[in-house]
Image 1 (cartoon, rainbow, N blue to C red):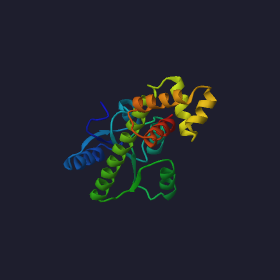
Image 2 (image 1 turned 60 degrees about the horizontal axis):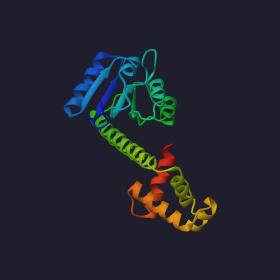
Image 3 (image 1 turned 90 degrees about the vertical axis):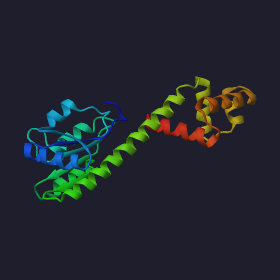
Amino acid sequence: MSQDSSPIVFVVDDEPVVCQSLVALLSGEGHNAQSFLSAEDFLEDFESSRCGCLIADVRLPNMSGIELMRELSKSSLHPPVILISGHSDIPICVQAMKEGAFHFLEKPYRPFQLLDIVRSALEYDAKTRREQRGRHEKGQRLARLAPDELVVLKGIVAGKTSRDIAAEMDVSLRTIEYRRARIMEKLNVSSKAEMVAIAIAAIAAE
């Protein structure tokens, strides 16, 4: 499934009736929902390219909700996790949030509470994926540059003047200006600010 497919709300709970209830609630609000009775079943089916969010019970057999979240975090791209607990356990809540849970919801909760959190999680996931695609696209643009053009670009990002870069590379100022023009053409930008922004974003994504 591609990243542009409709988002899926994944539900992981070892109680079939809970899975059925949540899927019915989510489907009633127009969400595409899928349920799994164990963390292992979910991981077997998991694809990082799928956009959406995950609702998981904290206390699952074999692999807990928090352990599932840790496993997902090994992937560079994974759905935000909403953990649900039927026990008033502040230490577990604190641990879950520290380890990257999107939200921690204690039972009993009101349906509208969960639906609001799901909407926020889906918006967050969509934003994260857009940003990652943007960084990837910028990296692809940088890959078009020749080695000597990359040297020039790194000099520009470092705040060096064309004259300084020419001296360091032992070439003429005219050559640097030519390479700079080629860089802007290959990156499809019209200003130094855009050029630097693309370089910084691509470096940050490495």
